[in-house]
Amino acid sequence: MTASDPKRIALLLPNLAGGGAERLSLTLAHEFAAAGHAPEFVVMRLAGELLDEARASFPVHDLQSARVRQLLRPLGSYLRQHQPHALIAAMWPLTVIAPLAARLSGYRGKVVITEHAALSHQYAGWGLATGLFLRASTFVSYRLAAARVGVSQGTSADIAALARMAPQRITTIYNPIPAAATPSPEACAAADALWGGDGPRILAVGNLKAQKNHALLLRAFAALPRKEARLMLLGDGPEEQALRALAGDLGIGERVVFAGFHRDPAPFYATADLFVLSSDYEGFGNVIVEALSYGLQVVSTDCPAGPAEILADGKFGKLVPVGDAAALAQAIGEALDAPVDRAAQIRRAADFAPEIAARQYLAVMGL
Image (cartoon, rainbow, N blue to C red; front, side, top):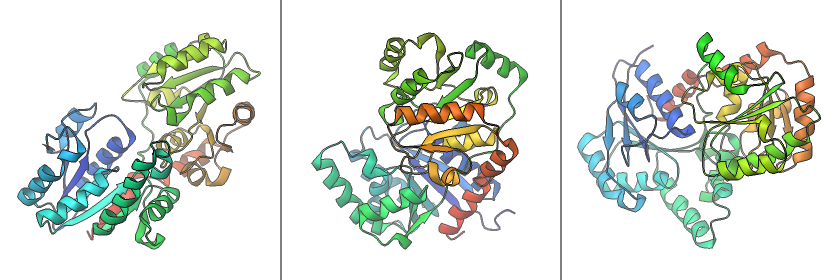
C-alpha cells in the first residue's frame, strides 16, 4: 500500500559510513519510498562507504559541519528552507541537537529521535563531565522531540533513565533487518577460499573496537578443544593490530582470519557454521538477526541491550555472561555439537522485517 499524500521524510546522520545505524537508515528510507513517501538524507559531512548507494536512490543534503557544535545553524537553515514533514535524527549528540535546531528555527514538522545504543554504557568511561552533559542534554532536548525511539527494550529503558522520563514516553522499534540474500556461487567460493581449512567455521561480524570485545572471543576460541575450528572476524577497526598480536600470543594466529570490511557479508554468513557475538554492550545487535536469517546457530554475551530480546532469552541461541571467556568457550563448543533448526531461526529473523519497523516509524510520525 502506498501513501495517497506523500510526505518528505529527512533522516539525519553524521555521515553515511558503513555502520549499523547508517545501513538501517538506508533500509528504512527504501521502505518509506515503497510506501509512497519521499525520504532524503541530511548529513554533517558527505563521506562514508554507503554514500554512493544512498545518492543512487535519494537526495543527500550536506550540512558541511565538521563538528557537532557547528551543526545547530546549518541544520536550522535546512529545516527552514526544505520543511520536511518529519526529521528522524539518529545517535547522540545529534539526537539532542535536532530538537533544539527545530525549536530555534521555527520548524513545525515532527522531530523523531532514535538511539541505537545504551548511552549510559557507551559513555561510562568518558568521565564525570561527559556523564553530566549526557544527562543534562537528554533531559532538556528529548522533551522537545515529538517522539523518542529506542531500538530495543533495554535501550528504551536506558533513554528513560538518562532523561528522567516516564518509560511510556519512549517507543521501542526493533531495527529493520532485511531477509537473507542468496549470494552467488562465485561469492561463496571466494568466501570459502578466505576461510581456508576444513574445520567448523565460527563467524563474528562487526567493527574491531573495544565495545565488541573480540579479545574475549579470541581467548574463548583458544580454549576450544576442537583445534581444527576456524574463526573469522569480519570487519576492521582500531583494535585490529592488538587483536592480531593477541591471536599470535595465544597460538591461534593461523586459525583466525582477519577478513576486513566487506560491504556484503552474505557469502560469509552463508558459509559459516556458527555465529558469535562477544560484545560488552549493544543497542540491539543487528548481526544476530542477520545470522538468524541464514539459519545459523548463535552464541552471544547477555549484554545490554538487545541480544536476550532477539534470542528470546535463549530460545534461539545461547547466552553467556559478559566477559566470561570460559563460559563463552563452553557455549561455542556445545553449539558446534548441537543440531540447529534452521527454519525456526529464519522464522525468528522474520520478526524483524523492514516493513514492520517502517510501519511503526510511520505511525510515530502520524503517517
